Image: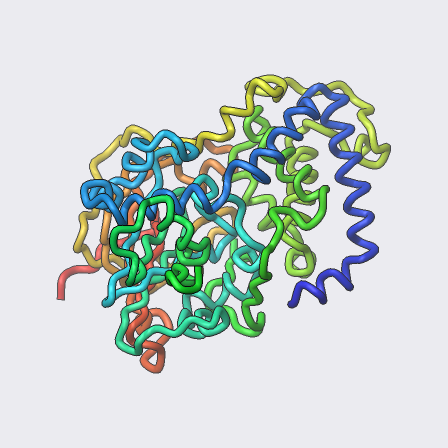
Length: 206
Length: 222
């Protein structure tokens, strides 16, 4: 189902949804369960503070700092915890490293589990049926939908997020970036490269 | 439950269609739904497993027709009615017509924002030693509970290898049904693509799930 299809079908349903959402917020507010200002603050946090830039800083640091990279791969929650400036990931973050031999890709076939603290809220495609159904059975076909091709012999490891563990893909550092600062490297790190459906940008294209 | 939410391996849903420069929310109401869900969860109205279960029990045709945040909205409304925090008559009136029910952690206010920015902790003290260790061959049980489970259908009956012990965690199958946390050992289990999808499938593919101990049985070494 495409975005356009959804929008067409849902045109009347959407406005009804909007009214019902408003009514629910009125009910929860009148009952004293939530403060509308607190809801505003939650929305704002996800629109402005929590996004792929958090994960990108972690990846860039791992590219520059071998000790940090080692800790990240051994205990990602602990490693990210040492940075302080990125949002708090709890105890259940696992980082998985892409190598010339192995490419990692993350999915949640049962719902839409995603490392919110590292990447923000998931994009629509990550939560939609085409990705959730095919990623575990035909990952190369899914990658082709993203315009990504891997060598035939590369192992593809798909991580289905069936529990509270959240996965962050550590992509390979692009060539031609020797001596780059962490900050400059972070700009090459895309959201999709940390899900495993893309690569970091290359220096020329950044 | 063997619901339509358990999509791994299904065909026919078409291509993945990434949206360039996708906004965080496509409509303002989506943000309100997300915020209400987070706030009511943090206030103690329900746990995350109960939330997932309420998406799964949406009728399958409806589940498939809904956008993500429509599922969240309907799941949230149904769940709050089921738990007695709101009533069906509140919903049809569009405002509160009945007294509130006490929330375990009280009203969610601006002071509570920081709390939801920290991810929950699901590790618990084990009551027994782990049955499996990395390297063990295990079979995902052929089980079909009618209620919530995190064992996807596409691995059931198949043999994989334990890669990592992730500690003892809250067991979603129990927690979702308000039957307590019932902590269980959790393992990353890796399956060969060929084991899951047959001899004609891509031999370079490996798929892992995180599986709770009750989902697994030991396969004796060959």
